[in-house]
Length: 396
Image (tube, rainbow, N blue to C red):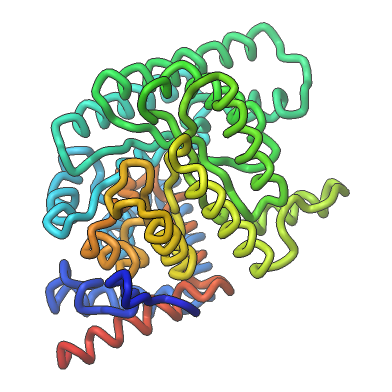
């Protein structure tokens, strides 16, 4: 794997920089936690018990989570709780993308609360030079069953039409506040069977707010065989409308679910057949965005060292400054510090996705993080190798 380029002063194997924000005690705790997560059986049991314990309010469940995986992958239970994490990241020139960890809500009051919390995050970001972006997930703003019907072009009931209109109003209020406070919005991608109406609504927001600068970004999951074409389609639409295009590129978060559903329902899987094809598609997306960087603001939201290095190399080849406002990198808080901190140390716009919220709300997110770290992607092996190298370097 290509993970260094001396000409760019980038070396993703540099663990001294990667873990410079961790004390010896914190590094040892991280090593212990990742060793626990490397046990797939333990993760499966823990995930099941965690969900069950939160649902039925079993004593000590929240306490155990709060003492273990929660601080590794989340900033805090509230915006105020998250401020120390934000400040500590900024000490190392790492920016924060705030993400309220609420999803798959159905009650209208809950959906309104998610919007209100997102707007509070925007207002907080406006007072923090270290928080240029707030993320939002549309399944926290509408019942996903409405999105599924729209994706399938099914007729909505009057009540569902009202629910969708409420989504439009909620997202517009979020985007309007972001525009007013000079904060960007990343709209997360979802499952393929609800994505089309999300894409359309986000494009409408781009057309409204991305007139002079990029405030609104859509997210493209490049493990989906259609997404490379969708990037080019949406970029062309922005060019036709005379606005700027915002694209956050990820590999994807629902691979197993997508393939299982396709098999159950008898349609071709929308996911690339293997990791090699996904990597090629992702890197082609990075090339397209950097080639068109005058009209595209892109974020390489990847935990793959080679893809991050590729964007940095392409920027160098085109003479784009490391801190160019149209070129960004981000990784999830608690993972791939070797990428984020080394990019930030070299002067790139690098950030961490910092999820926050009550433990009962962020449990689905935490389970995804622990499960993906035991998957065949090799994330766990890489993390442990880097942590072990730094422990050895420190003589611990």
